[in-house]
Image (tube, rainbow, N blue to C red; front, top):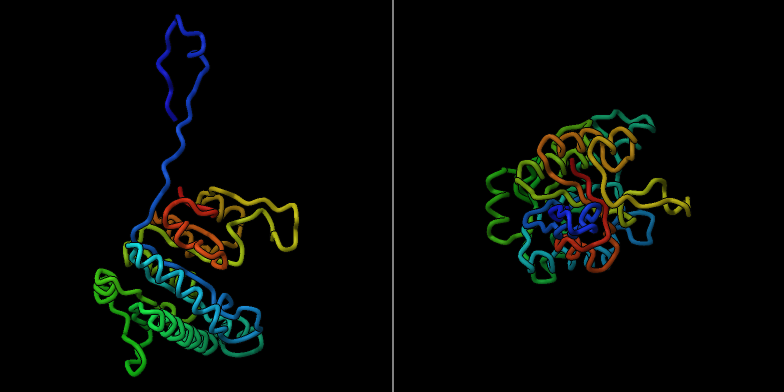
Amino acid sequence: MVRRPFKLDDPMSVAETIADPAPARTYKRVLLKISGEALMGDGQYGIDQAVCERIAQEVLDAANGGAEICLVIGGGNIFRGVQGAAKGMERASADYMGMLATVMNALAMQNAIESLGGKARVLSAIPMTSVCEPYIRRRALRHMEKGRIVIFAAGTGNPFFTTDTAAALRAAEMGADALLKGTQVDGVYTADPKKDPNATRYDQLSYHEVLARDLKVMDASAVSLMRDNGIPIVVFSIHKRGGLADVLAGRGVCTTITD
């Protein structure tokens, strides 16, 4: 906001305030969090290969444009630990099964990216060296510096933590400029826009507002971790073609959560 200097012989300057448009925010290194359900397409379970390849192409296009990208993918399209626990399964065991589901999704995304000519590495918080690399922070940073897309799997490696929390943790460890959350809609709304036609989208929110209004953007622990590290959360539609590149360039339709 720029105010013109006051002049007695300029009556317009008394109340005139010139608002300069805010410069578009651009991000160099980001962590992209998407749900496992995003890979299902129109199915009820599993992975739709066409959808996986479309998302992979979006990620690869952004990487080819100069961005350093790492991903965390949920496992809800295969197994959700909370639901398993609700049905009587012991919670820790259910969560470990959910972590294994995220490894499957990570390998599918790696395959999709590499089939399109990109380079990707899967790093798992649970060591399973036959199928992917163990998570080592410096190794992950080096992969990104070399232009590789890094996919973090198996959450934090511990039960009772969601992939939202894992995404926030990895974003902080990688020194990300933003945590991008690709969802089914193009931002955070006052209500579910699929159920309430009067729901309106927020352009900007603070971390405090998200927590105080219990907006369910991400887990409270994930939002708090991003607030403590000053990393913006950007919520956008993963299903809009070109949406990721637009958000990285600061021109996409989204909701930005900052201080």
